[in-house]
Image (tube, rainbow, N blue to C red):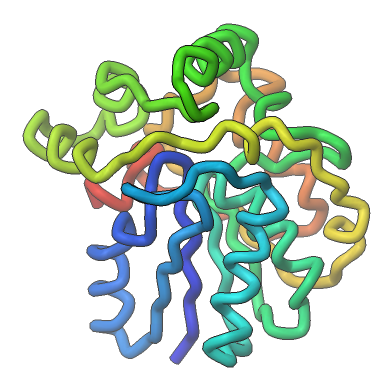
Length: 226
């Protein structure tokens, strides 16, 4: 039996993992899906990346979880990297799932293609609380391109505006890259959310150094479709 802690990505909360948790528990594992600070509906969105990280650290420590497999999806990958610096003794393996792997000193925004950076900046500026909401067209055509329209609509209804500050905070990752924790990268073959080149997930995964590479069929949001 393994203890999984599943950390969601941008626009999500812990409920995104409901179907995945059912599968894991059916196989005898324990699975936990915390919601990152500032994420979800009806909450204070004024958070930075350090506060996001601390909320996951607190969740794990408060529940006395140890020997965990800590997985981060998309934006959640930047969170688990910083969590690992704080509680490395509680983590058996890190899994980066369709997640950007940042270089030391980068922000998540820095890894986006220029047109994505411009779109995110515009969405955040047009809000009254420095958040951005995923346009449905991008969700449907790019992030969840392996689902029917009904599933695209029902899953989109679970989303909420994403705090922008955690995506623009520059991260000191020197300590992370010195950690000996085993790492895996889970790559989805139908994920079209990043163009090929310097910005794509496959190229960034190699920043992990020694790591286990696993690929599967599915889109960026495969936790809903499969």
